[in-house]
Amino acid sequence: MERDKLLNEFEAAELLGLTVSSLRTRRARPGPNPIPYKKIGRSVRYSENELKRYLEQNSYDYAGAKRIA
Image 1 (cartoon, rainbow, N blue to C red):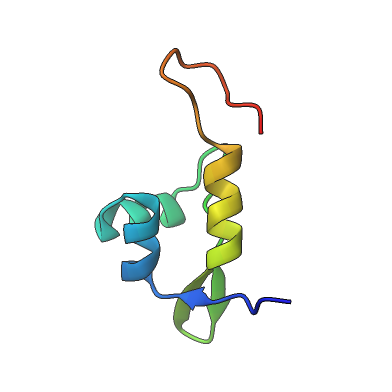
Image 2 (image 1 turned 120 degrees about the horizontal axis):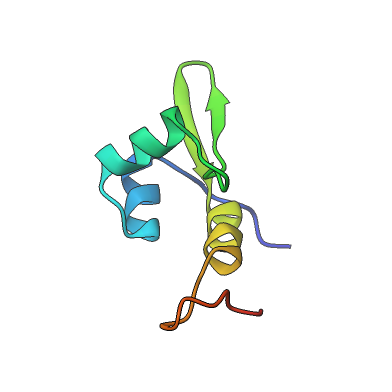
């Protein structure tokens, strides 16, 4: 079983194609599909596996229809 890697906000932003500022804003004001994160003391970390799952579940094709995985 592959071990899940915990990413810092710079790595998570790169994986999601966001700026660090956008990632912080989405974390502070989550909408209907919040980006999953973990709080460890004062540190914020993102599970690489959860972020990849988030991308799959929230991807849309060019016509705007939700992708069926």
